[in-house]
Length: 467
Image (cartoon, rainbow, N blue to C red; front, side, top):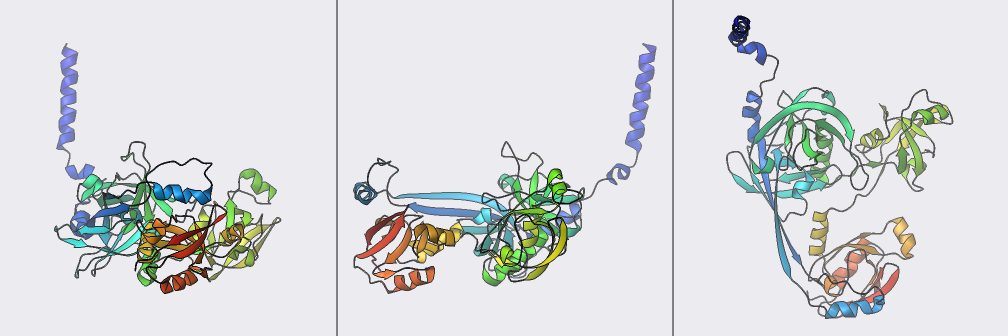
């Protein structure tokens, strides 16, 4: 019993000694974010969006598969029409990058939105317009009508180091101006999108990022924005310590192009590539696994035109080493199309340097652009040019429908996404340019034929333009 009291006394003395230590000794090992938050949180904004859509056309009724296509339209015409209005609300974050009201956020925060409202920390609210979006990097540039606003600087994200402290400010789950901190877990993470495109070398952190943080800034300890929070990996819908941000250097390039033209034109080689494993490295004459192995070339792509060949291993591009195949899109994407740069390749066991002229690849039209085109079209259809492969399959020139406005002449005629229009009125359609010219000259209130290809079958329908 006596020993017990003696041990208890020693423990008590030890705890008293710990409590008597200066608080600064423990705190000196941790960063103080208070000054950063006070100085820069006023440039972070909350973004609320509304998406209004009107569905028109046929109810979801499955027709028998054995009905010939030429008769299917008759059944569709006899089905009862429906008109349902739907409205969806969502929210995210963003931040001011100029005192004149330019705001950077994620594309997925505003994609398809009909109304965008921006709220500042002082509770002022502004309607925002979309300057431009880039789905491939998940970035969007907005503009509000205001002046003399606080704004944030984009840092040189190439200087970011693994293990460095970073901080995020945003509105997770609608909780305005929440702050969370952590460290950089990795840099240059490649996460392919649904189209297997990976133009973004993501910054991975363990900062708590949740729904509503999207589009918000990721700060370094100097108060500069090193990244734009974009994605999380989760099994529950909430943060589990795996969050990903778009590097600030990539955002700089995207913002410049969006300001200039409202869209982003990125470099393209026209190659299908794969990683080089240990066995492949030895068989190709490399002393270690590295580079991007060309498995396939687009016959009309800039890579083949510049002298690249299947089985070449690209070791460096534009002076930057390629360790993994995923490094190549990160390097090629930001290069302005038409620029010629050096590339070191391994070919048949020998290293050589080629001069490669980077090309351009037209990116898919965004949901917002489709809706806008369909709204402006007299027949109510957004269209785009056929690719060379699509033209070979169809066997004709034409344009493919990518969106149809509900209750439009095109919708009433039974046209739908994926149909290829080859004739409008009595004129042949060969491109988007010819489609626009022909459409503009069509008479109103007069039935007109439209010829299109649907799943390989040529069809005629009649459409009536009322204005």
